[in-house]
Image (tube, rainbow, N blue to C red):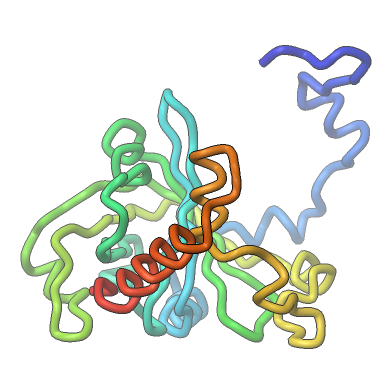
Length: 213
């Protein structure tokens, strides 16, 4: 990283602690190494999680979502995550192949607390595992196996501050351009024509509708 001119950067943990302070004992003791009834119950009710992975080439945070319980708890230290149809770029899976450490952040709509689960990930096409993850009569081609090494519940402050679930604070959907419009302008460096915009939006909408599973 090139250090920006005129900006002080913290480069050691002592400097961080001097400003941020030490965590309380109650904060650190909540970290556990096995799934138990509360974490299993939270995962079973969660329809959405964020998957964080990294490699020598960079890092990615990817959304994962389906019906509540789509992440399957195989036992006290193992989770199965289905790989549903996507754009085939497969950044997360490529990262896992090269660097197994990964993290999950589970959300439940309407709840302000979250569950963080960390561990080592692996890819599999093992049929018995894939069958456990079938949805809409379709079995995924691949799954991520997470060997859990750490988990803990995260407090509600970020969600309280953001008002994420407060419908009165939600932005009107048309306040931003459509997804297709933004992608085309990023690629071409200029706003697309109305015809091109309509065509890409139609294609994206059809793909989202027809290729969920």
